[in-house]
Length: 239
Image 1 (cartoon, rainbow, N blue to C red):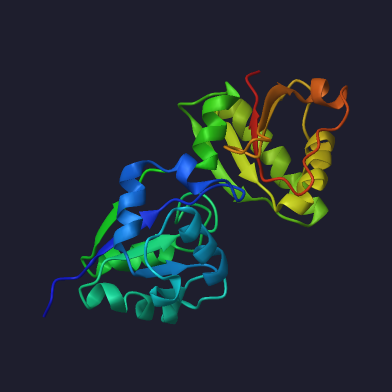
Image 2: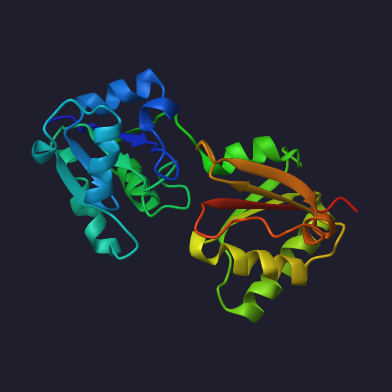
């Protein structure tokens, strides 16, 4: 029986940015050696590989799909190239695989099969936003997407604010870009004016915008243009 291949976790560019500008040469070199990939969407994965200078014909690359519709029983089949001894890349739609990303189930099963897992260097929207926020960087929690339903979302925001004040913890969350403004209005409605809010938008892109202010200060300004722009929200209360 051959030794399993290595599963490489490949960060992709954020918001359709230039892959060769944000990925280090060492990560690009690994991508160039692979012919098997686990991806959310083959079409966008091909566009990413092309932008990363992939040297092989894209029609010769093998793509296996793992997305929010992939059932638990289907994950094992995604590992077959690895079990056959081939190295494989796990590519997220944006940013780091397995972080707010369905690829986590693939990584977990890879460990169960004693497959070597290697995370590669690349942009993480969560960490970039935290770095640039000026908020508490030693105690923080990422919550992914908050509830869409208005009352449940409001309750979640109130609890996040309460937990931040109690634990001195930065709360990090995201939203589908087309619902950013609804989430911002919900934050304004649910949270106290002295709470600090960082909005980190279009990270690594030419249109990048990052600002940290109290909610009262944000409300006194013209609303930021967040609609359909990838944004990370960070909330922190220190009193």
